[in-house]
Length: 208
Image (cartoon, rainbow, N blue to C red):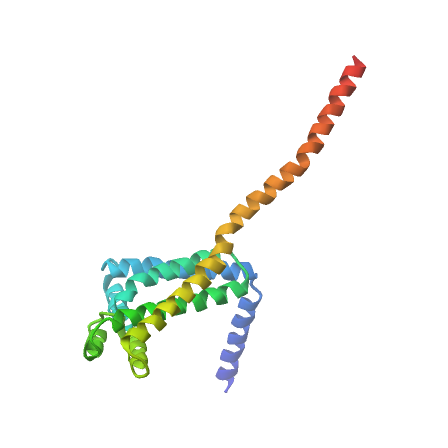
């Protein structure tokens, strides 16, 4: 009983430690974690991460199939977003957009094959893996291949719009806006500097 209380107290102390961290520090830590995942996954895909990397590659192949090659891109994007320390609501939109893209893409990878081969493709780590198998199978229970393809393409397009046309635009435009703000300040200060220079010049002439 005393041991449980001790463990509970230690957990509460750890929780309070993380809650006291600055929000920007938390985002930086998250960015480092996602960047680490990106690096390890890239190495694993090229069999350069040892036995653990090979196991990770085989596991990802079962789950995501061919789509595993695009996972590092998603992690890299998340890493950049967290390093930029954007607003929390932007991260939620980013996650939703990425999930829509992934589900749509993996479903399409499986849907292009014969439904009889869906299970075998997932076992071999091909197509969209077990995620693509699940999505494609559920769709074909209600609609045909053509309608299912349209739904999945629409899902991917919506995800792309959420990520790139919405939040990524803010991310890419931020440095540009900062430069414009700096230039506006310079433009506002410009006339004042010129007036001061003219006053100094006039004063020196009168003095002479």
